[in-house]
Amino acid sequence: MLVGWLQGKHILDMFTIGVSLAVAAIPEGLPIVVTVTLALGVMRMVKKQAIVKKLPIVETLGCCNVICSDKTGTLTKNEMTVTHIFTADGLHAEVTGVGYNRFGEVIVEGDIVHRFSKPSIGKIVEAGYVCNDAIIRNNTLMGKPTEGALIALAMKMGLDGIQQDYIRKAEYPFSSEQKWMAVKCLHRIQQDKPEICFMKGAYEEVIRYCTTYNNKGNSLPLNQQQRDHYQQEKAFMGSAGLRVLALASGPELGQLSFLGLVGIIDPPRTGVKEAVATLITSGIAIKMITGDSQETAVAIASRLGLYSKSSQSISGEEVDALDIQQLSQIASKVAVFYRASPRHKLKIVKSLQNNGEVVAMTGDGVNDAVALKAADIGVAMGQTGTDVCKEAADMILVDDDFQTIMFAIEEGKGIYNNIKNFVRFQLSTSIAALTLISLATLMNFPNPLNAMQILWINIIMDGPPAQSLGVEPVDKDVIRKPPRNVKDSILTKNLIIKILVSSIIIVCGTLFVFWRELRDNVITPRDTTMTFTCFVFFDMFNALSSRSQTKSVFEIGLCSNKMFCYAVLGSIMGQLLVIYFPPLQKVFQTESLSITDLQFLLGLTSSVCIISEVIKKLEKSRKTQKHGRSPHLESFLDV
Image 1 (cartoon, rainbow, N blue to C red):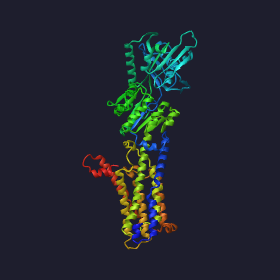
Image 2: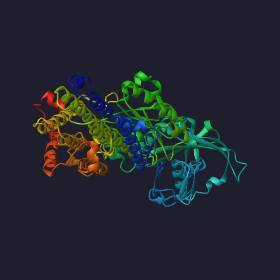
Image 3: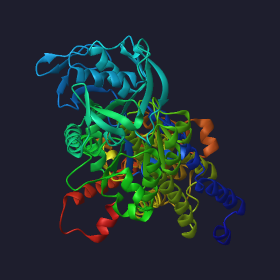
Image 4: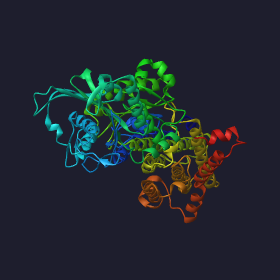
């Protein structure tokens, strides 16, 4: 305004231009677009079975570089089936059939076992069924899948009514800390018999309560040789990926007789292995936290591609023995935390965050709530999760599937890219508008745009074309890109350079048109109409090139974003109305242009898109080159 006034221009004209520029320069559409983009992203996540409770978490998902996941039900199906039985007196039985039904057989050396035809096996199955809180009705499980697998085993042997033979006098419920469950019962018919305890749980815990082992119906002293033998059997079953449960019975908890082991298969979820491979390739570390034994945990992790020869596994006890600093030093190398409980999760999260990691933690129990709250992204299970757990979480997996986490991260990265694209478009247009008027004033040119035209450009900047960039479909390759640093600014050096390049092209092109029209030294409505339309067309091509920072518009598809197509078409139709509709011509001080004029403007303004496409092509070429890169070119292209 001051420069224009000193040059003798009318103060009121300069004031209206200044106010219009101030309005155009402020990106008032940015908060709206960011909020709408995040909200639409949340809606897309819901369709992929992920419920995000807080909008900022969508952006955090793109920074996540460590996922700490439970095994059962998240990486695996949580559909348990007993496939192997080992008795304390050395029998091995194979179990056929899947699901929570009676279809299947228990086979020992080719013979089918029914009820107590093999007493040692019958006692294991009896203990597993009596020490059980689950119910199967019409092949539908109500209760824990592990207990459902034991009931299905009893059904296959014709022992599904044996639980009714006992009256439960006391119960010691299972907890993730003690890792066992026990019941004290009295025989319903033979009540003169002494009370009997049945126990099931982790082998390491159950064996502590055993003083004898069952040998063909007799209880023999349990010596170290037997313990070592059972440990080997447990390790063998675990290395096959089976979840191993130990069973025992006896008059008192400290005087139990070891009955044997059952191996339960919990197959990995379909697609999890592929999801794990994709995430690891993109630079996201995945750590499995489970209460299972080391052998079982490592076997499943290896099968899913989580565990390699260079990986480490540590137990919950080892986590307890280390302080946060010590755990932080080894946490990055640990792929499996076995025999771990919810209280270990919090320590694991803090140790990883100590290393600057952005951590996503899954959980489903009440005790997981603290760890979920401490994690950067707390993920609760929708099907098996408790209300307390869901309340503490930032995101809920409706289907409890690990793949859903990958989809959410993909969406988070895509949303961030869309916001980045919008910022590039809006800032380059705002800078171009400010620079255009400023240069024209400094060069003592007449104002190339009037106040109404500037406000119209502002509508386009913050209107449908700009907002449609926020709903650009997520690039399928975005999940393979590494997580960004949470401290990085959205305006990186390279993005700023690209914004300035686009702005310079727009300013130079628009000033060229204005200078070309002013060769008669008389400003007319045609001059400002040509300049005005030139700037608007530059905007449209700039928006087109801003749809992706790395891919050509032909790669992503000209019409892949239908909302963008409608927005650009609507803006062009609006611009044509402004220059051809008489009432609007009076408002905007425009006049009709010829087809030749429009063709010239389209050819000129497409340069901003063409140059952007050339830059993207050079960027791809740079990535394939190993030598001879210019440092300046590297900096310019690496966005």
